[in-house]
Length: 165
Image 1 (tube, rainbow, N blue to C red):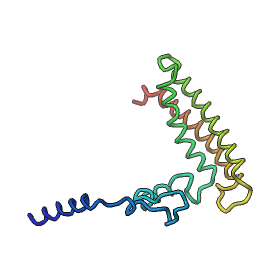
Image 2: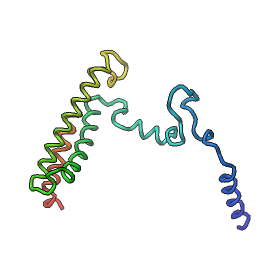
Image 3: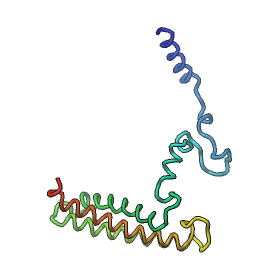
Image 4: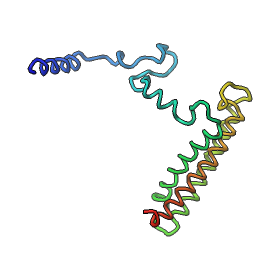
């Protein structure tokens, strides 16, 4: 038992006193220093890569419309809260309704921004459907419908919270 304890202290002692340089942990991505991206233990781990590949925008085999719908539902669902609780009408009776209208306004602005991005960034050919102008247009349409639906859903949840709880 004493040997194991001493071994642990020596291991920790060597780690801290050795002064490991950051170059042992953080390296250029794919060993190419001209990429402008660093591969750290967090960004290069298999867990991070798996998690990112399962996000709706990167998920393979799903149509751009459904990807946009999923992304939009999540955004519409969480955008209402700040407008409702922190908006200028937060102390009035119409705080929830004004939060919903503000959320719809922001969703329209975000949809316009997605549309403009798709117009200037994508052509009609591409191997991935998300990398074409038609695919991005479908993603944007799905985002608008999903965000509006998500905001409407959370509005109804908050409005009827007394009946639910």
